[in-house]
Length: 143
Image (tube, rainbow, N blue to C red; front, side, top):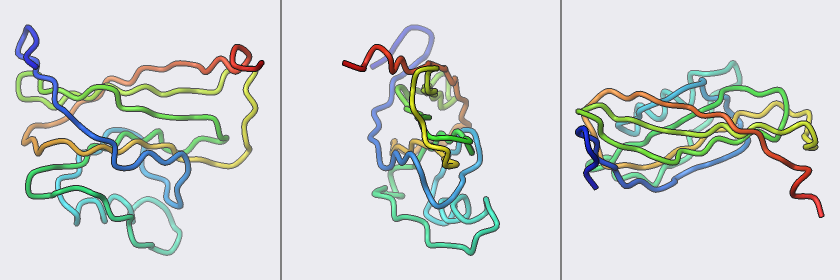
């Protein structure tokens, strides 16, 4: 779908969207173009013994992985969701939402590392991210 101003929406699919992992991925946008790069991202981030990165359902010949990570959070209740990827004049543009727990939400005290990973067709350009923040209204969902 072509939008005004040289913007093209790119289809993508979720390949991993874990709330908690055994690794704390660095905060930010990560463009992963091959399995070796994914392994480096997975193992470089903390002092625990290295573990095998989870296998990703990505066809590396035609696709790449886009990861948005919130880094470490001091409690549960945080989520991140990629909701748009596009090509804007050759730049891979990713829009994501960080959902934070609202004041009436119960959370765990466990350290979490929310991230969302998607597969998208391979793109040679650099990436940029627009991260929007929202708060969950847990009081409105209690019945």
